[in-house]
Length: 296
Image 1: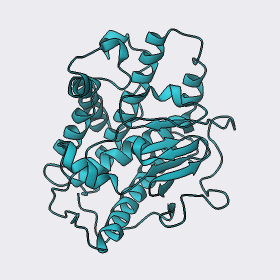
Image 2: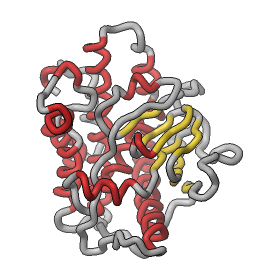
Image 3: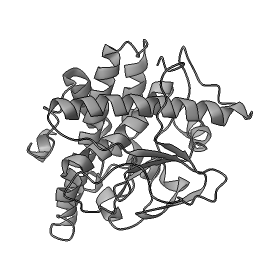
Image 4: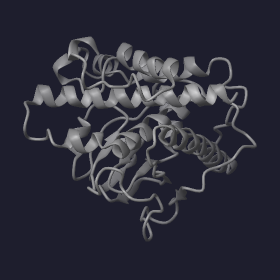
């Protein structure tokens, strides 16, 4: 991904070294769904149904990330690593602001920017205490995308999803949950908590996650139009999407696949919905809630 020398977002807060506590309010604007504070943490990974996290923290794994690009980030142990990670993250976040701000404007909708919060170890959020064990996550209560940059070094030793655009996909997926928040989708899904069976509950979770993958693909479409993508970037995103499929992770962790326990979708589904968004570049086509579950 061509990222160096471009605008960086001003909506980035670095809490590393501050004990993981947010000071004051977050400049993300008001909620976009009727003012309801959705206390919702949504982790990128499987292992925990994101709908179970309503009102508090949660657990889960994180998406694999490794560098392999023309403008690669050098992930050494040197002091410059943190600065480069922050610069890359801030640039991707700025691109996401531009893309979703324009898409919402084109649809006569108001878009309130999210915040990117970099932290280390643990962090206090409007959704309760978050942990690096959760991996990158979104908290609907404060519009925050939370990332502990240390997870990159962990991921590249455990999973195989190389490339800087694999990381961009991670951020875009989490901002996809913010888009759902802005559109009122999270509020609607929250209403199913305690009203449906566990199996049906998991199905809503899968629909939510696949839609966030679709939105990540929409983002990729738009930055391709700006000339920011490099050869292999889309393959890197697909590799990341595949690596976090429920079937892949269940097989790796337990040696068997249990479809009724899926909460994020299979590797094939996650790749396919990302590509749907990439090919469409539009909000239209991303409705994962009015398709028979078996056809997702």
